[in-house]
Image (cartoon, rainbow, N blue to C red; front, side, top):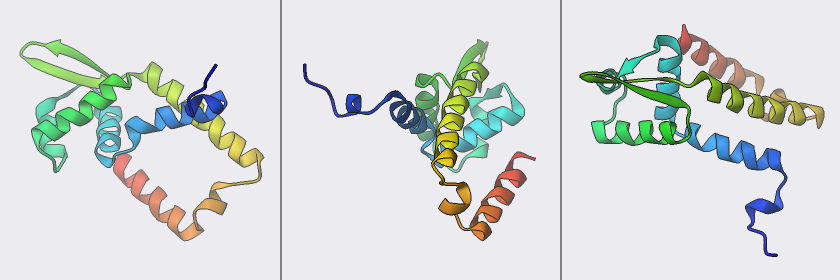
Length: 130
């Protein structure tokens, strides 16, 4: 029986790769951060939040929706978007397992990112979510 290239890897690398795709664009990261902070959000709010056209935002929302990271519900006449916390928790658990295995192998975040860069990125992240 023939295997696809992906099937030659064990489950964790496959899951990490698959779960990383929806968050591989800064617009989708920004959408998720906004939804985590504000909850139910109308499409029109994303138009003011992101420096992108409506069709491009729709495309990013579609990627997040297909990955089940966001939920969509109608409150006529509006469509509201929110985080699917159950799915996000699954993604976080997989990423935590990946980072745990990295750490156990002797590779730490400090080995991957210089300390001054890490402090800078963490400060940006904290500023963004507060």
